[in-house]
Length: 568
View: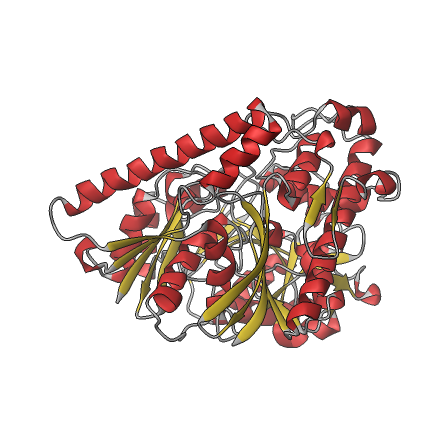
């Protein structure tokens, strides 16, 4: 049985193929079109997924779409009428867009199947795709389930419990009562792009003092004892096209930072980021604790765009009462294609669960033969190294302070580079963070970098007692080790750690071990192989282009090493 999962209604369009319950391939459309966060119908991703799976369109039995147009339509218009014309128009325009996008799907189906028998199409509610779909691919037989984002059809937060193939929704919150929406306001205030740059706000927060505006922000949004979210809407623009920071917001916190990369951060920008981050953490933590009390479950599954807030996730691990939590590597909308497909397979069709999404490397792959042909076509000088020697050579280059573009195996799914489409560097060098931000990534100087470390070595450097292969749980660097790995230690002593497992990424694991032999440290700085504003590289040509337009010193493509100087 073959299921095609599709997401394209909001942002981060994506597609996947699930065959007999196994995730064969998943690809984000942005990687192929090179348009970051695209909401276009993922026609290229679909074609590539089918190619990798060895399928034709006619081999697909079911199609799962991660939204249900028309869901909660009555609630939308009733609420819109009650709130006034601007809110009514917001829902009206949103509904028109949803139906327009459904028309795009119909057009694609007509072109693709052209009179042939079509697969059955299932429209899965957005938060069901997030929450239930993530639970179904988690390692837990039963768990509390939480999905938090800006909004879906109307819902903003889903709280429930999953057991085997079944799930129960305990409660939902509806727009504009949205933790995602209020955090967007802080993102916009700090001069970043809302709905896309919330990770920057999270990274900026440790530079500010949450106490400056804490007492105000606590009254702007909160969680009630019944797990519902409260929002003082007088501070926020929440209608169509309105800035999230309205006049009252600006009167309270001062002038926003201009949305220009070179604009200076004033203290009020830092303090707003800190206060909103702190209050978001408190809200998520309270909601999780209440959910734990109600469900008595040992484990938590969390999804949605807000689940990418790795600082909050780290606190959930330590303080929520749950033993551990599972976050899909593509926790945002890009992962809803996978979630919708598994909802159809396990819940609609009643098939038993037989897959755990613990391997993020489910994208495209280029073998050594294809890589060599491209290098020769581009007339690039290269060295070919056998397995083992490649990792040793890369470790030596890193230890001498060089920066590597690392392109290996199958591409990751999700926003994090997890060792196959990565930029790597020595974390022990104090100036390395600033060098990569300025010369390679071309991004804001405050932004931190993540460490990758073999799972068996993490207790030596980090206060982390759970695995985190997807880089989605922030932890503390051990105080005595912070000066040893300064390039991956944030200003507050934290790090967004990725634990590396030999079973899922043997080459990257071996590289870390070789680096330890020459440096004494089994940790590497790992950041996504791209420059600011562009998607992570998908193809070797993307990697070559990024290599020659940035301050990278070497490019490692499979078993081939390309250097910018002959001494490499």
